[in-house]
Image (tube, rainbow, N blue to C red; front, side):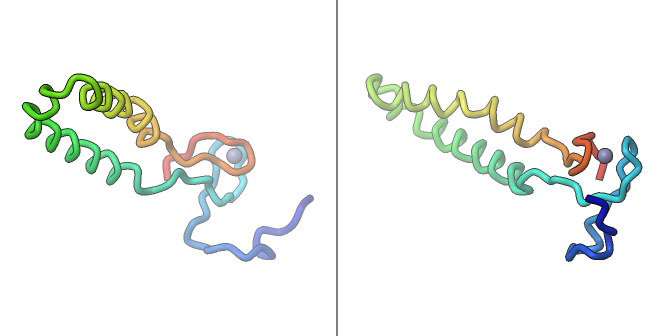
Length: 95
Ligand SMILES: [Zn+2]
């Protein structure tokens, strides 16, 4: 399994030299829009703050839903924090 890198059909600008295995690899990148999703999340939280009286008036559906919504910030932050990794040795890359 030693194909030359040039034989593969890749976008050449997305190649990065891995500092650990010294291969020129195409990094495995996380989905690039998690930051936007987090901003939308905070926008939704601001909307919920504006609708506070309505939410607090209904303790059976709205407050548990709000709790679920707030608990989504942990996974969302971890998705934002994921960095691109080497596709050969899965070392984290700076690119
Ligand atoms: Zn590597």
